[in-house]
Length: 552
Image 1 (cartoon, helix red, strand yellow):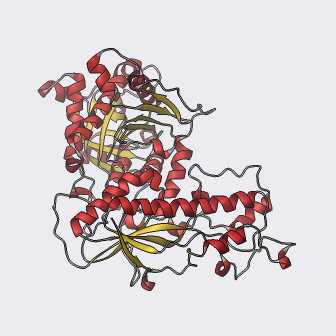
Image 2: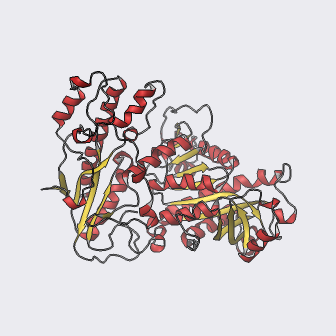
Image 3: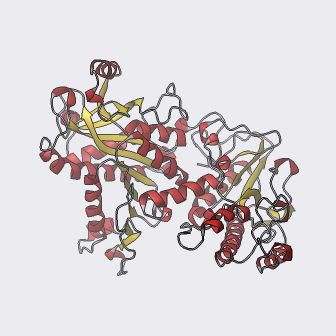
């Protein structure tokens, strides 16, 4: 339900930027090439100090209030689509070398709530409410991708606090690159001078708007500024959406809410085999019902294979000439609760990079499935390690999450992983413990740590009670903790360097053949169990700080 009240943003929450809302008529006239004759020789006016004051803007959208979350999201979509289309139209004219004597600017929509009293809500819930009285606001992007997410967050806020939802145009410009969902390709279209002059006409990504201060708990609003409503601002989200496309060669629209990471292509091969198997037709009624839970399987290049059990649809997309840096594969469900798997490669830097970006999609859980060095003599190649603690010697997150912050095991994920191992291996009790050991996993940033004087690292590993060593798990868990994404780790022992079983060609061939398929099945089963257990159990206060944002 839309109220008839129209509000203008308070002066004390306006950033020191040129306003983004202007009359559509003047903007259109400027876009049609209304150019000052004095600038014919140099239509792109570099270093023009008056340009910001004469910026072209799309239609004006006054701030409105809504009592229904769906109506609020509809309005957010209207604002975003109008403003993004305005930028895309202007850029198409720029590509045709049309002259511009004014800056082109359009801004993100915002959503805001105001509370005047402390509201007591169900303490078990981890999101959907604000910490106390105040004004809370966030900029919003890509309602086409996040519509369901926004509706749920705003519905909970309206329900828990009985407040109206304000929607309007923010003062944060949309960078021209982010107005194109799949990115813009400038090669061959624009000359060097024209490319350089873009910054004089369009807003480009600003590092000051892309940081993780809210996530890290270091954001301090200026006096009179609203408090943050979400962990990420719109520019930060857009930045990661474009990076995801670059790293994974799949569109962010395909990513699912349950994410598996691996550090070996073997696992991807098995996941691909599983995906195509689930998409194939079967006459078995029970198997058909299970396969029909998944709608399609997506591979790099946005190659889509549709489920033959749900009707015949031609496949889409074309595989890229070469695999991207971190190829992603998506076993999709209609509601987005399917499984995404990514080969992140080796090392903590890769692990941080990909989780930094996937976090903006607000997944419900992510789990590391990979190989590790077994550190105990009783372990065998192919045994599993369920991490219940981490030694962080990866160092890539030291500045964002200090080492004195403990990274706990999450019971909900731990239980799901243990149940999945039991289900797939058909073992229980002592036999289950024989093939799966729970303990501390140490993650390091030096793959050849064995070549150092081994006494020091071995002593530290012993003191920490570590039973396994890898290069990614602690990073993924720590970033899950930082981004409030439930996390877990299940590794498979591929070598035992302390006991003479090194990772060398031919020393573990049977292990690779026998265990990869089983390990992948366990990971998929664990994600399905987490989905069936429900979000109320998965999302808890354990990952939230004292004064948390309201959005998941």
